[in-house]
Length: 205
Image 1 (cartoon, rainbow, N blue to C red):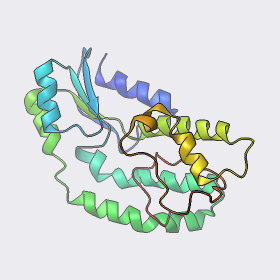
Image 2: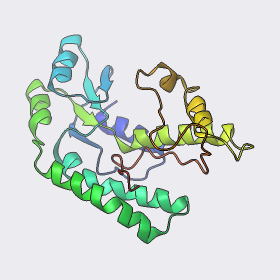
Image 3: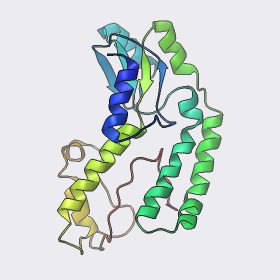
Image 4: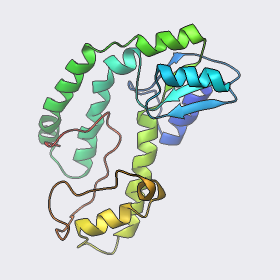
């Protein structure tokens, strides 16, 4: 298996026909059998991978090149998501505009060649898979909540949090789901899960 094969599997699982801007292969590799994968894989993790005999390092978050510089472009998916839940497209676009601009400006000045250079020096295949993984997670959580509340239109925020904690990954996490807007006994209304869209759209979204 090579890095292209791994990316194709991720795209297929997410139902994507093309590679999104926030995902990519920085250092291609062949004959991959052992992978070190994590949320933020940087130079320390590349060195660890080299030490333990891994054949490839996969980061979830983008760490190199155009995946960083073009990261803001995938945020437009949030517009489509908002529209699918009834938000007018012009209002959805406006809600995202400020946060998208900030992300673009911040990434424009980042040191985008730092970690892929380390990977090249170590001769370590290096890639990241961001939106595909987010889409897979988003669909799973949305399906879980839809099933939980299909016959309960008056679900409260407390009940939504409880339902989320039924998912093992949330149950075991130190940073548990929390209510940031509203109170526990407030009705949730229609529940939308938004993970895939680059980064948090901000309070406007």
